[in-house]
Image (tube, rainbow, N blue to C red; front, top):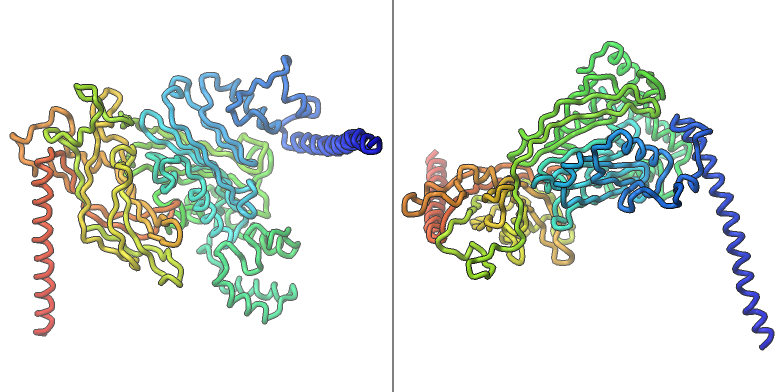
Length: 619
């Protein structure tokens, strides 16, 4: 018993000794990291040796309390992060920080004038890493979505894959799609990406697109040269042929040498030969680009811009706009004044700002400034800045609950037969060139159907979203059915309390049914409900049914637009949408008339086909 007591009393002392040893090792490591951090900051010109203080000193002030708000992304961080926070506080006293997010070396900070910040609501932040293994935050993006006066704005900063060459260009395009797919901001609309759910979206950052005066593809000569280099490194012809045979089964972002585009194969660091191969195209267009820079031929430089080419080919950011860069390339420059380019890199417009507006809102964003900051000397990039006027309208403010009746009971106006409602009749729905979503074992096709989703949610949500029937095994489906939707628009008012559809959206999301797992999203067509109903008078004082026929309340819109997901096209959708502001009695007549017209059109089409066949047989 005494021995056991001695053992138990000795254990804490042994544990304490272990902990003390761990603390010493940890303290030694922290000292090394602090010295490295200090050296890095001094070299970058962010501090001097006299100004620098240790992280322990920086985390506390005179009263021992951290003065950074708990909700701020600057509560903890590196020295330059805190210095930037101090700069914002000192130079922008009239602004409030709406959102701040640090992800690795990526930062997204949104400031708003204090009186404007009070009107901002529903702020969501999401991130997605696209570095090694999609884990490291050296590459990726941050997206913030917020609502200002009923207008949904999204801001994204991204740092995409570096280096020159066709493979890296393709990986940059894939990085963007991965960010949109992974960084879903609004939890109510997880089927739609931030591009779809935003009225206006801005994308900025070090996108790393380079200047390439070729077509962006490896030439035959280059491919032969690369093959010879691989042979010199000891790769046999048999191994090359095996890789050719198996390359089709590899993911697109994997190289034939097993790396993932970042010089990493199987999670191990790249060899010197692999690093040399990775950077073989760097600086390949330096002489031509530098000559154009010296001649200030910005038009010719923009013609070689990979991002401009990718936008034109719809390889990324479909529907986004950007202004031409009428200035010297912002990368890769020496840290100092002016533009002194590194000969190992082709001078390029890597730092960019793009924007996209929703359907019917394209004229609401007007750019007035787009320029670099040549006096910035602490980076090998010259940052750029842009100024944009965003027209705000009295957009929709949704009431979560139906209005109260005179008796004090809550009821939806949809049930009132004497009051008008906005009705949508969607017909002639078809999609073309949808992607294959099912595996080859299940037929290698898709089983599409369409969900009708609204923003705000109460417009269409009735314990679920309306949908079409499922068409099995078809990449070019045609729905013979007509979809009738009734909008509970009485829950939506503008700032003055008047009924409005400004800012309201209809998302026609194409889904693929999957019995074995959850249904997959193919893509979405986002439509502005205010544009679809622009010719309707939805004010409470609109004419009564006794004075005006329901046909006078009908607006018809023909839609032909791409199906989008994560900034890429996944087929086309066509349909006809009739919108009308009707009572329930008029709605019945409207639907009967539409059904009659559909039969007449079907009979006409059948007669036309018969006549063509008869004419063909006569010939």
